[in-house]
Length: 317
Ligand code: UDP
Ligand code: MG
Image (cartoon, rainbow, N blue to C red):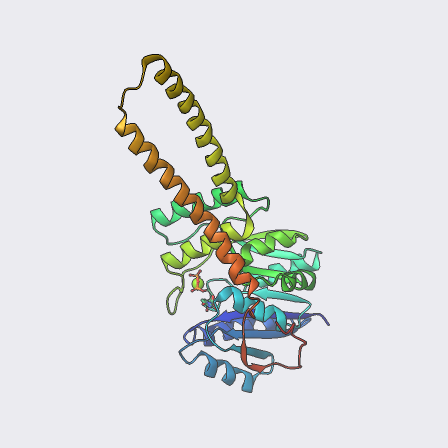
């Protein structure tokens, strides 16, 4: 019997859990041919999420959980889930029912057809401000142009991964995680399913505008060194102009003589170059900062308590 793990990272989701559990039970009822496991990763919630999960596990042993020692963020929580999942395939979904469980049936079908990574693509982005929509369009364009891997638009983390893919992701143990990019990076046979994403019913989104910007930075810096190259190219172009400018002044001074003039030019050049230098240093700094954090080799998450059906040999990171 093939085993399917449903992996749900939860952060302050006590309101959504009962409904999610009911929906999942309905889904599981439709697929008796599989052995199911619902793996909740409690990502340091401060509300009653853990109690809710414990309660569910007491009644139903298909429910498993991992309680992290604090809030590590969804990306890290997902890795914790991958490390402890026992399924032949793993379905990742949000706790807030924005990802319709009914789509999982189609994902399973595609998986049976031999696809390793079945992802759900939103038909549209739902309720979002115009500015946010434009920015996300621009961001994907930038990411697409600057990296070699195709990072898909309107695709969240809702997907089914074969064991192969899970093992591959488990080997990527960087501290700064951009899982969306990792899914592209690992490759394997992919298939997309289109769906309509609903709006969150209970609680509110954990991703503020600034958190999204931080995630966007993560995406760029962890998947491409294009900004560094951009700094190099900008430096080259400016040097070239500077050289031409120098020749012009050299000849002018020799021919016309030395006339002290051109304060505006001077100040513009100084300021402009200063700006470009600071920008470049900033870009380098972003990468050095990441090297610094990565070299510490800290664990990506810490487990406080587990409720699993059998001990899984976690990677111990
Ligand atoms: N989440 C998490 N840790 C966090 C933030 C979010 O595990 O630090 C979980 C959250 O419980 C939910 C999923 O990640 O199951 C997606 O979060 P949310 O719905 O807030 O994001 P959005 O749907 O707005 O992208
Ligand atoms: Mg959500």
